[in-house]
Image (cartoon, rainbow, N blue to C red; front, side, top):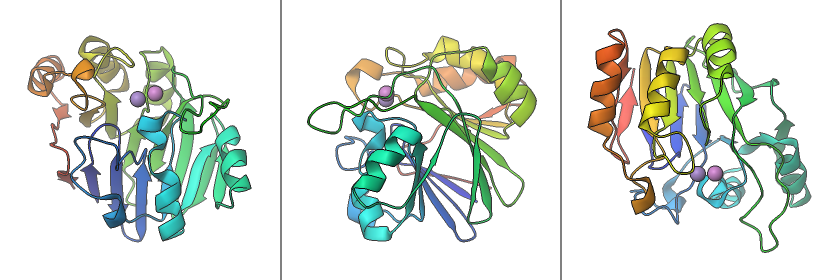
Length: 231
Ligand code: NI
Ligand code: MN
């Protein structure tokens, strides 16, 4: 299994015949090392309608034929443009390419700001990917700290790998993310949504040291944009 960080909250996750892209913010992402034409996918998961997450979803889906997973409101919008979608909502699970994908809560907003007249985009969300190899990956999307990270994400879904924002300002900062880490208690934590722009600059290594000191069994993996975490 490969988890490749493309900078910001964009990840490419590959296992067997599954190639999932989460929040493919590629062409306008100042730290993304690949060109949008190079990105391959058969599933795209969108956490919310902000341009730094929705990104190049339509262009990539057009070229690759990938199915787009998103909330009901995005699904209706995209289906009208002719895209293949799997609309869903918080708490629901869909199955595709031998993988179950559950949509979970996040505390953020989701207006579609990638269209000329900003449109209502439902609720923001996160995803749990139940991989075919038994590993569970949690991508939180943009979010603040919320109690269900402990009682729902941590206690019920028990993800092995968590991808959490640490950039602050628009999402959790390192302090809140370190509490989220304790609540979710994954084996592996990969920080995201930082060092893309000056306003979300953070020291990943400092975050790693702080979290690993308090959580002896947790591994914080600091990736550079383009780097792959493999297992
Ligand atoms: Ni956002
Ligand atoms: Mn964002």
